[in-house]
Length: 277
Length: 316
Image (cartoon, rainbow over all chains, first blue to last red; front, side, top):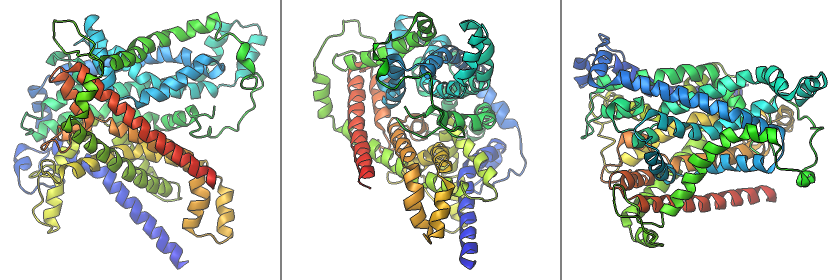
């Protein structure tokens, strides 16, 4: 009994250590974002700002085109999520329902596409988009994001489609519903939650993305949030900490909220997609 | 690939499916299916498969940005140059150090956390909630955040060290000796939750009865882990470490924000190196060759890792 209790205590201690490790950087970001410049310059920084202020947020918007960046990020992420789900869902359906050469090729592509470093893809993409005059434009970025988010979206969606029993579709067919009709009124409603989760995940992926945006967007008014964030850090690596923290916090909020909502579904999707084949 | 079985649903026999291999004579797809597949297939071919092949081709040319003269085939010249490019191999070495240095602790810490979360402990919900933060955060923000932590004057790390009487702290990200370890800690932090979730899912597929039976037989915690838990989560563990290794080796944003490869190239990962080569100096062909070498070496390492691990499994 005694060793058991000691083990329990050890477990709680370990869990506590994990909690601290996971949480403290984020708490420090929050604390910095609400501190006035005087406290940021002090040699003995405190966890809790002595007099919290919103000045950093105002200054962040003054220093960099944050509103533009927010808008660009939003357009890129929504565009990528919608297009990715629109084109991935039918493909996922085919992969899940039929065993064909194509399904296997698509699965192979999902795996292989994870292994390639972005450099090998970005240089040709850069040249292709340049020829299409889509460089330095948000629509061009959306195209890249769609393809980039596709493997995981496909992975999740295949799992969700497999969870819809084919017997239901067969029953509808027996009742005289055509194929399109079956898809629209039987399959689609059952898939809807999975599709929403996938779209939200694609949104976060695109919202957070940095490398492609850095290479493809040059004009300051067209850049997305992560790229603009790096402008707060000067060439010498010296940063205006307060506004930087404030802007970073703002950029994280949408992703955090969405993830909190869909966390269960993502893990479910990850597993469901990883079906034995 | 067998990553995990479907959770919660018992495996259902598929009455409509023929045995594998029986459908060889069938058409690949019928017309309706093509209609469903094409919208995704085209962008994949044009924006993913195409560029990849194009990228490999570029590695054998002297392509440069903003040049008017036509690009020419130069055979393996880029690769010969690479072979003698000590800066690149130094960067490659740092890349491997970083990838191993992040992937291994990431896995061990994630395994520990997953085992804890699999227990009946209070505060589990809090850990799950906190684990979302590194996972959902944009990599750039992770970098920014840790810059605040590591900041020599206003950072919490040095302040804590001062409070504990452990000296004055230092400038972690610009010290030659501390930069790489400091960056590795951030990498571990950022990737831990995803690994934890994957391992936890694997753990929850472990049959409870086996555990109880082993406990009845008087097996200690370590033995139960070795004989019951580990075999059950092994496939997941293998897959996630392989993926983590690839992702870490190819990572860019974190280090770009934290140190931008400095000080003195001590944290210049191969991706940063190739990025500069391509988009600062405009050497597209040379950078593409670097990409090819990265893929090749990573593939070999992973193949060895997986083959070794799989063989180890059979011997048991």
